[in-house]
Length: 285
Image (cartoon, rainbow, N blue to C red; front, top):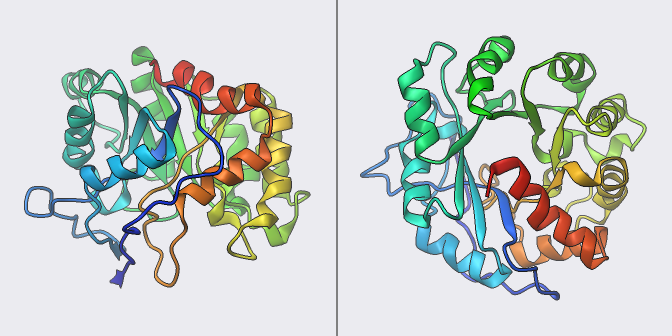
């Protein structure tokens, strides 16, 4: 089991101020472990990353709305994420859960009442519903107005994109499609992602540091982010990915990550679209 680095103690503020009602569309809460123990099927060991720690990060960045994404280390036990949403308040928090394909209707309705607005498929870290269940689960959640969120590797996207485009729900792609920057913007996976979001059939999260081949300060991500913003400005979202799980040798600064978005989207209107308007439409704020 891989031990992970803890989140940073201090979050330097970014060089620009996020607009009011800005949303962090992708982060995780881990623990406390006596209340929310990790799943035996996990593939890494995260250190605790608790609500007070995240609130300090959000305060430094100017984040007022937030989307807690169920991490693989909890499998389909969503209690930690749902507890976090309740503590943040459902006026400003949503959850993307992980569920089994055979989940019953009453449980789906209870998750909805607790702030869940999407279901995640994780083809990278696993320990959740396999991709074979995409279509069946999409049909189950469509009446609720939920979306499917997919975390996949870039090489999977050319084959996966047609399936995603045919689903009866909105689709969100994690981490800019998982295409490594060393492959270039012409890589088949990234081109499949551009077509998918450009068609209006998907959204994409501009959590870009994980696709960087060069590492900090992640300058190599800029052409990919700009291509996505040009292709689908109304379907781009942003998230910190705090506390940056599974990292073992370095830890990004979240203020610097928001500064990256500022460089990719230098205009005030474009920043507001990504941080405020787009999340409000997708998550129902």
